[in-house]
Length: 591
Image 1 (cartoon, rainbow, N blue to C red):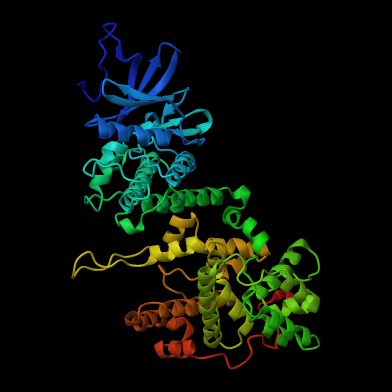
Image 2: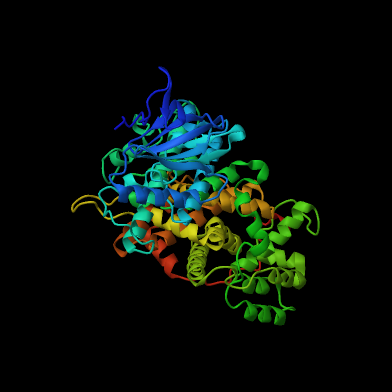
């Protein structure tokens, strides 16, 4: 039997040339515990081929038949990012697959230097596109390695070696040929696909870090050193030849997270995160808004809340009523409130319809400027509830809307005297604008983010819980951008200026709250306090009181409140209408 690294059973035809059957072996491209790849020349066609073989010969005829069946199934797949099989066969007991090498080079040959984030992500996105296509066809790679990724001119990548290690991966399992619908086969397929995704994360780690994870070029060997099989932790180093954007760092570290539950489970989710980050990096394409632009055009920021027809009827009967009474009804529907603000602020930016230099921050001012016709136009622009959401997504969005309204009502009660109640209400709601649009336009991703933020049960009795990710880190890892950045991008798209964008960003949890030296700063603080308090109520019952105490301590000095004041505000309702009759001091368009 030939050595695994030199699978040539034919006698050498010259002293310096090795042969594998009729194929002249030129150089070893790479090897792992499961596969090896050679650059070979076919003398008949004078064509260079990439030859991929398993490192271990099939044990018997049945094993060889299984190998051939798996590779034959893989060879039928046609995708731009999957290298096409030129030939498959068996030479002296060694099964092999040959691919057209073209002038492409294995990705492994570019290792040893850090790639810029966008370049590394572009390469891996192509690999993930081919991998996702294969996984959805029921085919796993089983040994994703950099030397099995062929990169051509212009950075085009093709994935080779699909299913070549399938038989070796199944060693230790039952040797019978499983039906495609067998539960055991389905579980094995899912496990193999998840391992492929983990290996893809390791490849991306190596491209960005400039060296393989754990200094081990074989991704399979790294996998067995990581939890749950091993104890090694793989995270991008903080120091490197090139800076790494925080969203990309979060994506890479999630791909190789020490907690299995936090890792990407399929190629599409990792691909989606990388594509989201790449789009937000392309500022010319709109930054974070690029993720939402098409969806905003087709489905709006939010769908009209349930009961829209009844509200429309009420508004039509109120045509002669005062503006603040009309605004009170419109404020019941966040989508209608947002659409009114969008219309008047967009018009202000375009220099039409609106006088004044500042943004419009109240619904009553928007109604005063556009009249009932503007209200009707805004209502007609909304999608009916629940838009494109299914029942589960609609229920989640409705719960979030109610939480936002509760936080806004709480902020109205907490606000210092002389601050306009409607401005406080809307600023508090708009601090959740990113969360609202994510739940509406990316409901599955919103669930992933929520899952990643949850702590895990202790590994053993007496040990602490495994912490979940921060909301920012989870959003980076799922969407490739920050949720608040999405909200700010939407608000900027509506025509709101930098001062408003600062107000609708919550106070960072990592820094203490400082005294407010401007009205804008006070609005931001009041809204942040109310939102954090409502978030505290979503924790397990045993943690609510301590969490509220922390919020009270954090904001107590600036807002002159204690824990009891905070709890009373959460349980109370504003005694006066939200849309006050007095002009809003911060609504410059109303001045």
